[in-house]
Image 1 (cartoon, rainbow, N blue to C red):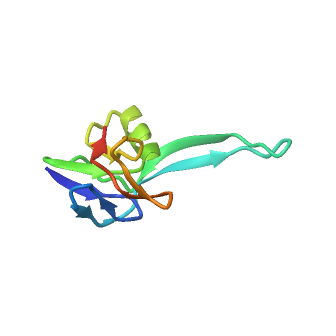
Image 2: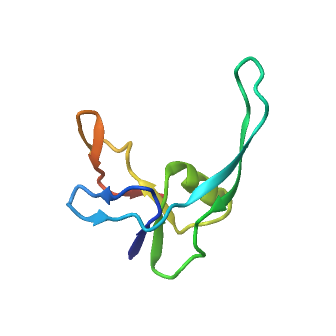
Image 3: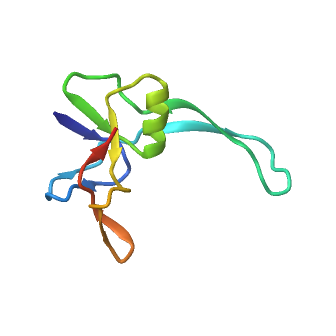
Length: 101
């Protein structure tokens, strides 16, 4: 399986394998006016996510993964940052055990 990292930073797995960023996939957003310092955010289209490709998984943020699932995409994964085997140092994620779908 080929993994294409579409997050803005490199992803390192606990086994030492690293996936450099190859672009950034995002979800468009619109905002209402502020009322009492609060506005409503609405998410829209996926931006920067290539069409599905055989034997390829796109590594995206959890937000993009959620939007991709809603759009019927099954080729996206996100770093498993909430997994108990995630490695942290000084509060920052150093590596993840793998990906979630």
